Length: 513
Ligand code: AHR
Picture 1 (cartoon, protein in one colour):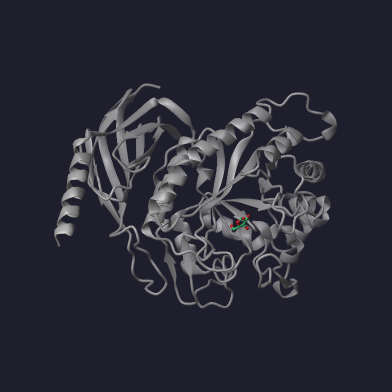
Picture 2: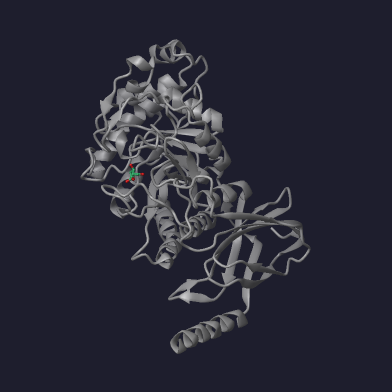
């Protein structure tokens, strides 16, 4: 009893001393960190486990519409509002042949999913994917098979999707009921090609460069307007240098994958790791800059298609939280409230690195490491769903400097992590704040080089504990509270709830550029 009293006394003392420190957030619109691409709020679906079949798509479910799209899932996806959707993999692309997934469904070839197990019916194929994208208003990204596919096959896929002339593949799309081209602009040149255990054959970056040129040439000659994502490797600087130099001028993006997990059940460990994502992205951006031309010179006219017109950007085309919860691959993750705080950290980091990131796709949208989980009867929003939705809904088009001074709660982990965005035309500014402190934090707001007219509103996401979770056992319940607060004229100080995410919208009176 005495021991408990002493420990409560000490922690109260500790937190009082924290409160005595002046917590402060400085926001400065004169420091622009780059345009925020809306595509950083993209999602990804793969033929993996129950992501597509029984997740996005279930033709036998009473919960599905006439197209086989799960209505309850679709409703939640629309809330997330992803501006971009990547398909069909992931590792699975190494065995994916797009022609297996077109035409009358009863004639499509069901095949073993050699990578992830199970059977693929391919009843959700290219046209169904495009219909889904149209339904949710998302830009499609298609990933090609470099391993067991051929350059011809990839170019034919481009023609099937985008062809407008009297060609076999454009006509085939018309025959399948789609007179208008799909206009798929973004195409990825493989996925995690360096991974030796996978079914790929490009673990040597020089071989990747040599082979991929054939794919690029045929795909670009089929449709010169497409944009290409080269396969980067987050752990492999040498690989990235070789492919950037080898493909310079021909590719618009280089991919980067970022998954994190918790160490020994300590939630703070994941926050710390994500705070290093900033550094990793900055290093990667530096590498991209040093190994590709800002403006492409000496482009050979005999390529017969145009070179890229903007500097190469990073496509974080898979990111998320991977906790290794269930064998064999640990991808059926149940996310707790602290995972939502971790997600908001990631998004803050993407905002801070806006100048370098052209797109990012949470991996994956349904059932695999996902914000949305389903069973036969219901679907739920996991905790991570809520920051994904609210950040997407509130982000403005330009990232500006925001920095915080706040109490350190464990080794080098500060309580507050922040980012800010601005719309200069509409005179709006949005501040995103994650508070991982178990205490509320009264925080001074210091606006530099601008005057705020008023705080329009705040959206506060919170839960009763870091370990709170939504599960399919109780699909009607929701542990995450979303509070929308009233308009206030007080812009000098805000109290951030404990272990919360707060998004503040301000109307500006003036700013310095
Ligand atoms: O998203 C799950 C898997 O993770 C993808 O198939 C692969 O690209 C990555 O390793």
